[in-house]
Structure formats: structure tokens, C-alpha cells
Image (tube, rainbow, N blue to C red):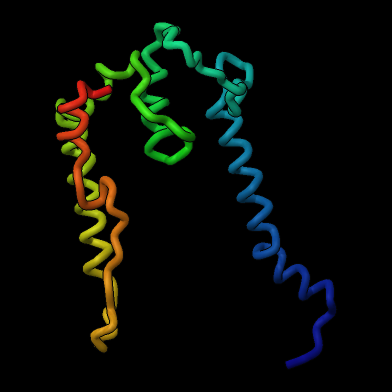
Length: 148
């Protein structure tokens, strides 16, 4: 082919070069529109929350589910017992069907993953399990100890 001027080359590449910037612009614009509330932008990042440790409840019903989430993500730090105000929540979670549903989903996903693992077949393959709620249930323990 014939030699091209750098400007011509730039014009041909412009759509590919502009696509990431256009995508970012659309993403930011949509984000601001989604966050808009009656013409003002809501704060997207929450302020630091310091839940009361003494059992006081704000009445919003959010402490126990948030505490549960922190435990499940291993972000609750050391804790020896369920907070007293969450005993009813834990009992309802464990006996009300949600625990069974959560366990079934995790088991399904784990089995799905296991079926997709390619085994070398040399007799050296092994499964290693973290023996907590992966293979065992704490439900009998919690029931025997009043869910606290």
C-alpha cells in the first residue's frame, strides 16, 4: 500500500480510541442520574457507623442482619457468643428456612465447582475441606445453647 499521513491514521483509529472515554462518560452520567433524588445528588458512600455494643437497639432492625453479614464475611472480629439482642434473629435464621436455603445454595455451587475441576488422574489429587459450616452444621449446637 501507499504511505499514509499520520493524521489519516489518527482519523481511522479515532472511534477505537474514543470508545473507553465515551463509556466512562456514559457510566458516570448514568451513575449520577441513578443517584439523583429530587434534583440533588445523594451521598453514595455511607458515613462510618458505630453500632452500640451494649445491646441498645436503634429500632431500625438492621443491627442483627448487619452483624450476621460481618460474621459471614469474617469481619466481625473475635466474638464468643451471639449478641443478646440477636438471639431471636439467629433462631429465626437457623430454624425458619433461610439457613437451609443458604446451605443448599452453597452446597449446589460447591458441587458445581467440583464437577468442573479437571483431575490429573495420577492418584495424587486430593480435596481439602475447612471443617466448619462447609461439611458440618452448627444448628444442633445453637439449638442446645438457646441460639445465643
